[in-house]
Image 1 (cartoon, rainbow, N blue to C red):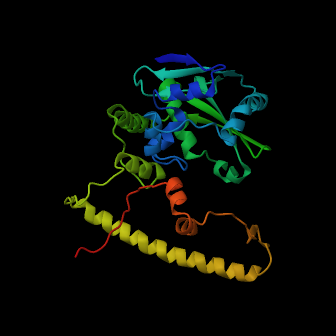
Image 2 (image 1 turned 120 degrees about the vertical axis):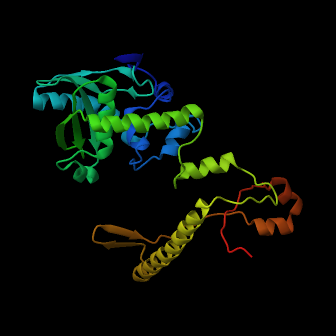
Image 3 (image 1 turned 30 degrees about the horizontal axis):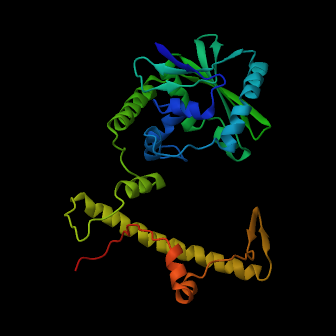
Length: 313
């Protein structure tokens, strides 16, 4: 059974975002599963906990919404299958943390009512749609099938503004079972107000900085045995970073040598620029020396916690 939480017709974007915080939506599924290229589970947790600032929809999301009707119309033109827009926010009755905001529904000759999902993609991502569907969209669609109980979904995509494709996805009970487990575990973290396992994302670093902003002077603790492997991992990564930083600088220096006085260089499909930039910066050192009172009046003191690993004495 499905519960209709709200009508999304003419709903303001910020209000829609507030509703999404009440559960896990289809586009959240790939984040919870750890395969999303743009967002980490910790960042998603911060969103659900209302700890991230409101963000306007980006250009890609904006145009995806604007072109949704066009994709829907073109799908019907090519397949003869009518699509009915769905302007509702749905909730699974069996698993209330699962939400769904469908682009539409349509009829399949064998499976009955199905989900319709409209997508747009840049030409650079055309290869991801060659005889396949990106994993994050497969998870999104299976999430919707879990919420609605439908047996399948059509997904249509406009690529680069001039290539149109569509595919049918059958319900995958094994994948849905995995989604139920992972999304259920994630939502327990939200309800308990405890973050999921931290990772290497900026969101994790931000969370730790805000959670532990200041150190207790001279305080010392014995870390668990698992810290040893993490130290090895950190030091090995530092060695690789130094190696790749040197390689990067060497390549940059040689390219600059090739450019000489020129500002722009062309090599195959790349454009290299070495451009003169003028900036005005406040000379704090001189200001402090010549006008110490004024410097002290406008100087801001900032604090942060410096992290390092070194051999014990």
